[in-house]
Amino acid sequence: MSEAMKKYIDEAESALLHTYNRYQIVLDKGEGVHLYDIDGKEYLDFVSGIAVFALGYNYPGYNDALKAQIDKLLHTSNYYYNVPAIEAAKKIKEVSGMDRVFFTNSGAEAVEGAIKAARKYAYLKDGKTDHEIIAMNHSFHGRTFGALSVTGNPHYREAFQPMIGNIKFADLNDFDSVLACVNDKTCAIIMETVQGEGGIYPATEEFLTKVRTLCDEKDILLILDEIQCGMGRTGYMYAWQKYGVKPDIMTTAKALGCGVPVGAFLLNEKVGANSLVAGDHGTTYGGNPFACAAINKVLDLFKQDNIIENVNKVAPYLEKRLDELKDKYDFIVDRRGAGFMQGLVFNRPVADVINKALEKGLILINAGAEIIRFVPPLIITKEDVDDMITILDSCLGDL
Ligand SMILES: *Cc1c(COP(=O)(O)O)cnc(C)c1O
Image (cartoon, rainbow, N blue to C red; front, side):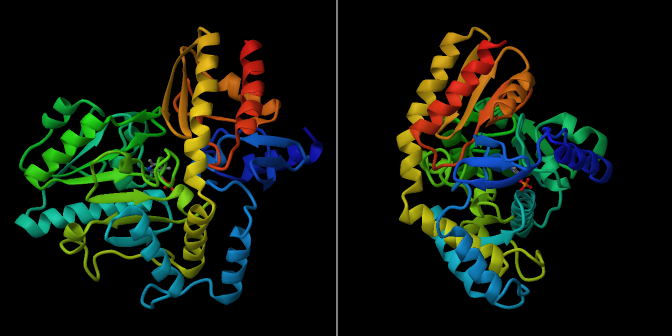
């Protein structure tokens, strides 16, 4: 490491609040599926800022669209209409099949809005204020209080009690555990269609279908968090589109802006017409023209360049190559996931593997202590997969 890089890291550790154990590199720029640190060292990126840079770096047309909007208008208040937000809302409706859009600045804020909409819907039905929400163990929905309250990792919640009230936890893919939590107060069931941070666990079609039927019978709202698994990552624009179910409320963020901080929660007409009204919810920056210009360009490029088609073309190859590693090393016990959201499950911690890969120019990330998570840009080729496997294989061989 250069003296300059070391100096920056020291400065970072004396100025930034230490809420992350950061990898010891200072990133400088990106191009395609590669990142470069300030010493000029190149890295193959299989993290994409944690499922954010779906288009990789400097994707043709994307930066220019942002620059054009910067020169036009960065921000208005939500008290006024702006064209990029109107266009973005129309496009999100089209790709999601949902009916109403509220733009946020982040994923956690989208989850907050989803929870508020669900509680308001239930409140308008019976006037009560003691409604319950069922969430899943091992889930991750964000760090703000509402989102944290439905995050199924007691360690994240413990020091910050009390959470928002009336949350119960069930197990993903265990319908009976959900049934055991349901009562007349239940207003919503929230889950990730594919759990990300908690260890890459896809919801099964059987489970989702049963939960959907239960929700229909009892007028409970199904909230699907698509913040990580959405935006084409599983080979569908939204992961739930693979199944014959549709959420009442869904959240999207991360790759929605491909680097510009933006999210949204989406409602079907039933919830849209019977929940949040003027004065109930708001945001200063959410849905501003700059953020929405990013969404518009991202969704246009997804369509124009068949981004999701590439996922469906290359993902089976990624799975095959990861399965080969699983067969080769007995400390790798499983491979699971969907599309470009894959987890390689070890029977030992993976931190040293990830650090070794970083030294060799490959950026990977974990999902829990014993799982390596693969969430690359959606534009990777089979050659990129081969390059990744070569480096990872050499790190594993060193163990
Ligand atoms: C990242 C993530 C969030 C939180 O999004 P932020 O933008 O970090 O607030 C919520 N849900 C899921 C599934 C996520 O992966």
